[in-house]
Amino acid sequence: MISQERDMPSATIDTCCLIDLLASGHAEDILRACGHEWQLPVAVQGEVQFVRQRDPADTSKFVSVPVDLAGLISAEVLTVCQPDVQVELDLFTQYAMLFRSDGEAMCLALAESRGWLIATDDKKAIRIGRQAGLTVLSAPQLLKMWADNARTDQPTVVKALKDIELFAQFRPNSSMPECQWWLDLIAS
Image (cartoon, rainbow, N blue to C red; front, side):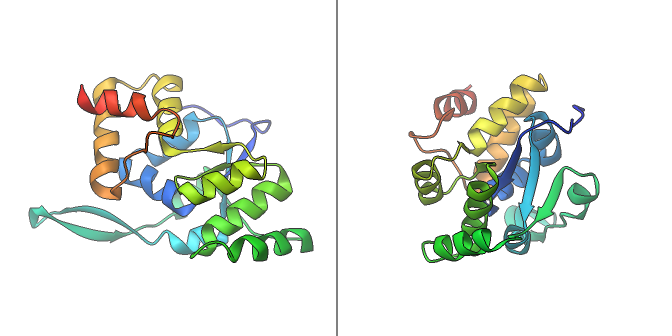
């Protein structure tokens, strides 16, 4: 396991990206391997409620399983945060008018105000984050960092990618960094 150091850049993670990592079955390892201090906005914490898994009684079906982020929080992999000052509240309000949920809005507001990176797989949040001058990461990039930094074996990485596709119903679009890496591994 890679230890976290206090001088790592902070990054906030939104709901869709966190659900993708949780669906991989390796969320903690992936987050630790990426070299960031992960910030979990309270809005995202409230939105990440379930992940899909196979039904143990009938593996041809899926069930929604409640997510418990307490382990990632107590292990200090995720640090809960929220807007603390008026500028952050104003940015949150501004971004909240653009999104259906508050998770992306809070991630963008905090990242912009505090100079953090943002991890999201939401196309609109990626576009708006880049327009705001933010460094935007996506699940494919995080998984590639995990594969490279933790030297994760290829069968484990392939299974994680396939689990994300199956359980989170996410596959990167062609404009995302590391999309081709993902698709090549899935096809191998």
